[in-house]
Image (cartoon, rainbow, N blue to C red; front, side, top):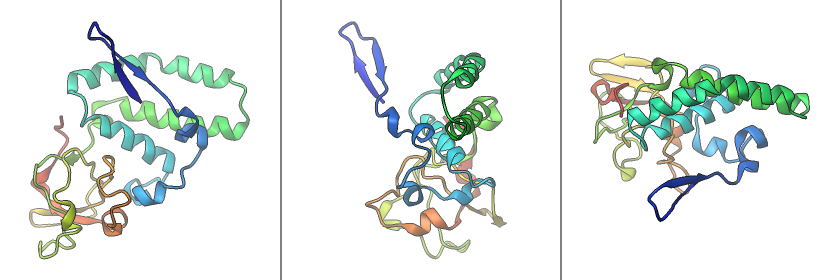
Length: 197
């Protein structure tokens, strides 16, 4: 999506490359280079893609804008499903798009679903173990604020082991950091909150 500013100060979005969106293409070759399917219990690539994109918006807009936009889309839910039902798609295409729509409306449907736990501390570090002896991918610096975290895999004192969802593509190629994508990491419990933005 691009944004164009008019001379009067209004901004208009321009959506492009829709033909390569997940709901149209059905899958992405780059998916495994960015996301860890184990982040979600369902391991659904469609669900992971939608949640990643929605969580990224939390780093771009304030809560009032996010909530207003969520309400607007929720009001259009019946129309979206009606258009899908009326479309001239084969059953596979309809099923793919329905999974994206289901996930989207579920993920914006409540504050609990939308405001997932994310890293909120400005200098949070990912570690290979709870002892904090070995940072994971230290050359990339701290975990960006707004990075979603999974439910804890385990806890140890003030540390939790979680999977990170690279919604901001901080560890995406050409960065070489497979440990950040493929394995759980340890972070300070206090670095995580739902209260963001």
